[in-house]
Amino acid sequence: MITGFDVAEVTRSDESLRKFLDSLPNIDKVGLEARAATLASRSIKTTSKQAFIDLAIRMIDLTTLEGMDTPEKIHTLCAKAMHPDPFDLAVPSVAAVCVYPDLVSLAKTHLRDSPVQVASVATAFPSGRSSLAIKLSDTKLAVEHGADEIDMVIDRGAFLAGHYYSILEEIVEVKGACGPAHLKVILETGELQTYDNIKKASWIAMLAGADFIKTSTGKVNPAATLPVVLEMLYAVRDWYRFTGEVIGMKPAGGIRSSKDALKLLVLVNETLGTAWLDPNRFRIGASTLLNDLLMQRHKLLNGNYSSSRYVTID
Amino acid sequence: MNERIDVKKTLKLYINGAFVRSESGRSYEVKTSTGEFYANAALGSRKDVRDAVKAARDAQESWQQLTAYNRGQILYRLAELCETRRHQLETELSEIEGLSPANAKREIDTAIDRLVWYAGWADKISSVYGGHNQVAAPFFNFSVIEPTGVIGIVSESSSSFLSLISQVAPAITTGNTAVVIASQLNPVSAITFAEIAATSDVPAGVVNIVTGDYHELASWIAEHLDVDGIDLTGIREPEITKKLSQLASVNVKRVLSHHIGNTNYANEPSRMKFWTETKTVWHPIGS
Image (cartoon, rainbow over all chains, first blue to last red; front, side, top):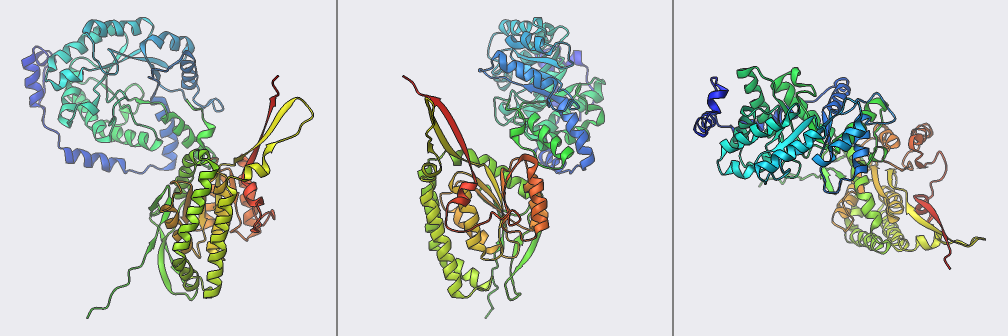
C-alpha cells in the first residue's frame, strides 16, 4: 500500500526517489493479467456501441510517424482528422494529429481553426538516444511551430541501468521546454521488461510533472497490451487518490480494431470511472483504428457490413 | 471385455485455413438419410460469415496475383487429393446422403474430372475471352480478364459434393475467393472438401466453408459490401432468391440464381466467365 507521500520530498534526491520507488508494492502478474482478461470479455449492448464508437473517434490521436511522411500525407491526415467520414459530417473529429516536429507547422496550417490539436513527438523519438541539449531543442522546435501537445520518450537505456533520477530530471527539463504545451511521457513499455519496471516508470513520469503517461512509440512490439494499460491506469488512479491531480493516459501501438478500443474503454471505465471517458483524460494513439471504427459505425447505422474499400487508405 | 465407444467427428467451420467452432457456440445434429445420428456440426452465425468474408477478402489479392499457371496447378493438386480420398467421399454420399454406391462413384468421378477440367482452364481463359481487339484507329486495344473478387456461394443439398465443386471451382479458377454456406442438410462432404483443401496447396482464405442455415446467413453475405458476387444455386424458394438479389443491389453484386435463370452446371466455361470482369485498355501506337 502507498500511504501518502510528499512530491517535493520524493524528488529531492536520487536516494529519496529510489527509496520511494522501492517502497511501491510489487505487481501481481497473474492477478493483473486475469483482471485485464476478465474486463476484456465484457459485452456491450448495441445501443451503447453507437456512443462508444463516437467517443473512441473523439479520443484518437491520428498518427503518422514514418520516414516517408510527405506534405501531402500530412494534408490528407489533417483532412481526415477534421472530417473522418466526408460523407457523414455527424462523425466527430478526432482529438489530435500526431506528427514529427518538422511537420507541425504544416499540420497547423491545414487544421486552421478546427478543434483538432497538433501533437508532436520529440526528444529524439523513437529511441530517445541523444544529448539533453538536442532533446530540448527538438522539443522547442515543435512548440515554436505551434504544437499543442508534446509526446516525449524516456531514455530506456538509462532506466534499465537504474539511473532513475536522471530520467526524472530529463522529464522536468522537457516539461520546462514545453511551455503551455501538454506533455505526454512515452514509457515504451515493450522495452521495460517487467510490470514492476513499468510501474516505476509511470511513477517517475508522474512525479516529474507529466500531463499524460503513454505506453509506446508504436515502433516496438509488444506495445499497448491490456495488462500494461490496466497497470498504468492503476498508477493514474493512485496518483489521483493521493494528490487530487488528474493525469491522462494514452495507449498507443497495435490498437487496430474497434474491439481493441472497446476493451480499452472498459478498462478505463472500470478503473477510473466515467470521468476519465473524456478526450482530455484518455487518448488512443492509432492510425488504422479510425477506419475500423468508421466501418463499425456504418454497420450500426445501415445494418450491413462495410468494406475497407469504402474508407480511405490512409 | 469392454465394448469400444464410437469416436464421432464434430464438423467444424473452415475459415481462413483453420477449423473453428462457431463463434456463437451453436451446433446441430447431422442425420443420415435414414434418420440416424451421424455427427454434430457447427451452426454458423452472422459473425462466422463476417470472419469468413474478411478471410476471403484478405486472401483475394495474393490469390489473383499468382500466375494463372500456378493456380491451375493448385486446382489439379486439389483434384489429386480428392482422388486419394474418393473412398471416404463415396462412403459419405452413399451412407449419409443415401445414394446407391454406383451413383456415388459416378458423382465423385464427375466432380474430380470437373476439377481437372477447370484446372486446365486457369491459364487459357484470358486468351479465349481477352486479347488484342481490332479497332479502326491508331491504337492497341487489349481486353484483360480479371476476377470479380469475393464470391458468396449457397451450396445445394442434392449431389452435395458435385454441386460444391461445380460452384466453387469456377469461382476460384480465375482468382476469386469464396465464402460457401454449405448445405445444412448434407454438410459432411463439404467439410471433407475443406479437409482436402487444407492439406492441398490452396492458400488459407481462398475457400471458406460455413455450415448452417442459409435462411439466417445468406442475407449477411448478400448485403456485405466486401462481397462482389453471390451464387444462390442452392436456394429453390423464388421469394428468397428474389429478396437476396434485391439486397445484393446495395453494391451491384453479380447474382447467379434460379430466379434469374442463369445457373447452368454444364461443362462449358460460361459459369467461370460469369465471375470475371473485362478490363479494356486503349494504348496509342508509337512510331
